[in-house]
Image (cartoon, rainbow, N blue to C red; front, top):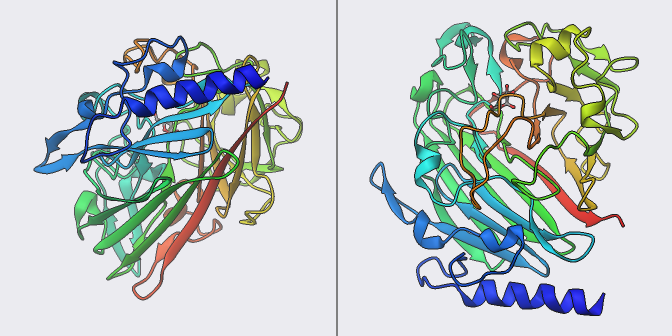
Length: 391
Ligand code: GLA
């Protein structure tokens, strides 16, 4: 144990010593270490230095104790989350790329991104607010997904590293961008807390009424990114009900019990045990899990919303949030067409997302909690991903 801990500290020191950039101090590099662990495949800060849309991109490294989180201001994305596994081996549990370019090229996978202005789908890209109809960019069949063509995940945010363990990113979305009303200022702060916690604080204000649903779209594999299927991970979701969808993944408006369905995760269950239940229409529509769960926690951040255990690593991730919903996505659209840091492909169901949020299509669903933000109001929400190990 002592020795393992020593090794862990040594590996971290090597990685930290490899920082070679003054502007993005604390940035990590992969070139200078040959340690055989997924954490040795940390991307180089240099690979994130670029000018995109006339703005500087960079990599920020946050650390506290045994945990490191790498963040880029391109899409305010989490690039890596490194935590110890049950043998104290530093393990990168977040999928991402080795440089900034792939995030900006090709179709968006939303790896690690902050999605907005509206996370998840708005039916037919339309909604009414105060009697006026708005037409959004439609980028997912007939629907608008994750804010539209670029949303908040393909823009450069302003970043300020406020300490060794925190960075604040700001993005001003102009009125009319992707079809949304209101000049909206969003601020996202990533904080690596003591005891291996990643806390995400979201804040926003607008100058005229709009709708807003910010979330983080990190793809997790608790056995280490690129290590294979997540179907043997055990998942608990503290939700007695969920919002079933139509074939385009728009909620029907009903809130239905999970009991007796493959959506009952109130007791920890392997993701893969029911994911191919073709007799279930909802599983068919989602091609697996891609559904919003109505959290029993009702916005109480002190109660656990979800828990996931990596079957090989013993890494446990607990989710706490002020949000009322959780989109559990099982990587059904992953198809191996992207190369991750470390060289592995993003194969089918090799990662999952736990997107804390308001329910999809809320602007068109009168019985869902409102996602409207008015001028003079302050939007604020917090989500914590907390890591530990089970032997
Ligand atoms: C969300 C959606 C999914 C999919 C992924 C990104 O989780 O609900 O349908 O679009 O994002 O591929």
